[in-house]
Image (cartoon, rainbow, N blue to C red; front, side):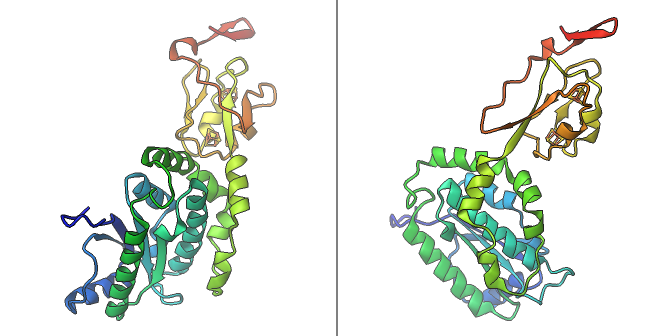
Length: 281
Ligand code: SF4
Ligand code: SF4
C-alpha cells in the first residue's frame, strides 16, 4: 500500500537475457516509465522458468508474475526454450485456477530487444490490471493463509505434473493458439485428484535397500536393518519403488485419494531377524 492509500502490487517479472531483458534495458535508457513495483529477474532463457518458481513467488506473497521471452523462432537456443515457457505457463494457469487464483495474475509475453516502448506498455497495462484485481486472494475471495496452504499442497505435486505431462511440456508447435487448449481444467482436476502417494508397509519391508538405490529423488530414508520410509516431502511420485520392491516382499503400497499413514517412529524401525524369520522390533 502506498502513502496515498492506493494498492501497490508486488509483481515479479522473470525475463530472458537475450530479448526481453534487452527490451527492458532499452525501455530504461529511453526513459519510458513503468511501475517501480514490478521487480525483474534476469534468466538466460524463458524456458528456464519453472512451475516451482511461479508457485514459490505466489506462496511468498507475489500478487502477479510476468514471464518474458524472445519471440517464437528468435530464441537463442536450440531447441527453442520459449516453447517450453509457453507450455509451462499454460499448464500453470490451469493449476492456479485449481487453487482458486485468477489466472490473469500470470502473464507471458514475447518482447524483442528493440521493443522498449512495447515492454513499457505491457508493464503499465499489466500493472493496472493487477491494481484493479487487488492483493492476491482479494478478487478470489480466499483468505491469504488458506491460499498459501493450497499453493503449497499443489506445489508439492509439481514433479508429478512434470512427469505426467512430460510430452506436452516438451511440445514445440508453431501454432501458439494450440497451447491454450493443451490443458483443460477437468484434466488438471483429475490429475490432482488421482495423484498417487507411495507408502512402505513396515510389516512387510525387509530392508533390502533396492527401492532406496533406485529412487531418483533420494526420497527413501534408508538404513541397514531398518524399515525404509518414504519421505513424502521429497517424493516425486514416480512409482519406481513400487515397481522395484521384490514380489516376495511387496512392501510398497500405492495410495490414491486417502491419507498416507504416518511414518513409523525412528526408535521402532529396527528389523529383528530370528533365523530366517524377521519382524519389526
Ligand atoms: S515414488 Fe518411490 S522411487 Fe519415486 S520418488 Fe517417491 S519414494 Fe522415490
Ligand atoms: S525394496 Fe521393499 S523390502 Fe526392500 S527396502 Fe524397499 S520397501 Fe523394503
